[in-house]
Amino acid sequence: MVIDVVLFFAGLVVGFIYLLIISNIYSSWQNLEECRIVNKASTPKTSFSIIISARDEEENIMSCIESITGMDYPVELLDIIVVDDHSTDKTAQIAGEFKNVRVLTNLLEGKKEAMKYGVEQAKNKYLWFVDGDSALHKDAARLADVHIQKYDSSFIACPIVYPVGKGLLNAFQVMDGVVNMAVTAAGINQQKFYLANGANMLVEKEAFHGLEGFKGNDHLASGDDVFLIQKMASNDPSRVHYLKSRRMAAVTKEETSWSSFWNQRKRWATKTGAYTHKGLFYLQVSIFMVHATIVALFALGFCIPISFFVGLLVLFIKGMVDYLFIQNMTSFFGVSKVNKWFIPAFFMYFPYIFFTAFHANFPSRYEWKGRQRK
Image 1 (cartoon, rainbow, N blue to C red):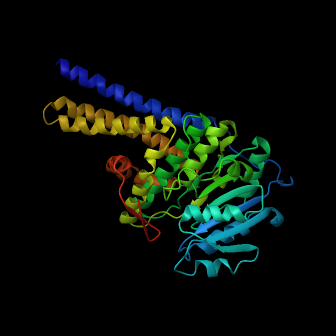
Image 2: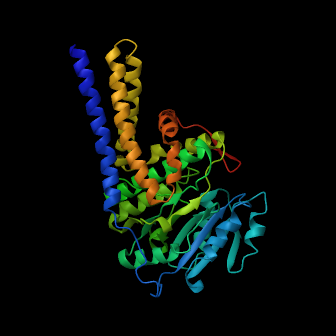
Image 3: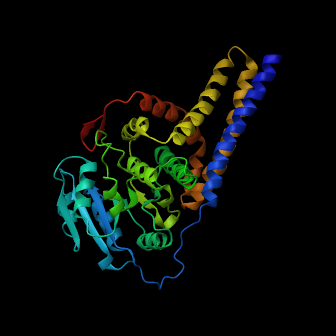
């Protein structure tokens, strides 16, 4: 009887802790001011060098550049650079067909080197990093200009969103993506931890050079985004911001096969150990422990029947919290059609979080853009 009571209250505590964690994240998201273009007749002032590092993106590079050249922004304030990272397809050829687009060939190898080379050639005040498989909204540059004029940012983390397609794999990535945007915004807004996505981020060129850019994490193939924002925040957190706007979101391609998806998440997990801000570590551990506790309660149910029902209780609490959270986030980004996949995606998150936790602690080799990395 005593153990039944202990398990019941332990389950309630775990559910309550999870509720507090998600409520804190969503509250921070809600409190963050949404960036808007108040006066469309106003004259933009900020100049951008948009750097697109691309490798084997012949299927995407045209739509990427078209979205950028089609932005409602003065041409003289845009410097568009495509750095071809030794593509084996027609990426460079397609990019070269665009007027006012400079196409460069990466002198060394890898995305980070391509980005660095693009920075060396950049002419304007702000560096805007965009992936070759992403597309920007026509208002994106004006929104960035509005934000910069108001806050004088040194680093702006911008949202990314995956297009709504078909099936569980697509839906999971869309939901996971918008949740990550809320987590990213909350960390930056509360100055607890700093995340960013290299598919859509802006950096003041002077600040980039002042902190020696990517120096310090050259040994890692990826992580150009997270480590750069951490350096910026360590120098002056008051100038590091998240730009909250649906129209600022870069629409980026999702993984289309389960093997490529797990390979991508393995790659992302390998850089976790190099994060310098402990706030993210504590959040990740807390989320992991909630999932581990639910699994443990169900396993213990074979010996102590009440444990199974406590596991169901915690699972129900988590499910309700997750659904309300995801429903609000997908609604904000206009991708709520994926919510019909919520239940299978909800259960998929259990193996997913154990998979990423394992590879964060035991990094292994992975393939990225046709190259073997570790």
